Length: 102
Image (cartoon, rainbow, N blue to C red):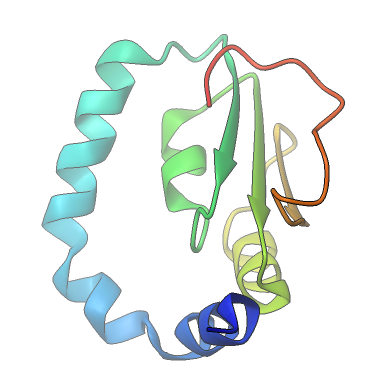
């Protein structure tokens, strides 16, 4: 399976499913806010539109994804000085930065 191509497609077609799952995503965010303090630095792999990282209001959030379409969508939707979204392949190499949570 070509995951990059698949998640590029998902980025273009996930508005309706994401809207239907809004309550579920809010529950996850509430649980994570209990454990992840705003002062932390968090790395998230495969983050979709970036709403989870943005919702945590972090000191630093880095979202990595295979899909350039997902990166573009997150960059447009989640504009914050503390967030960065980049295209990356986890299998290719390490991230040269330390994080409090992944």
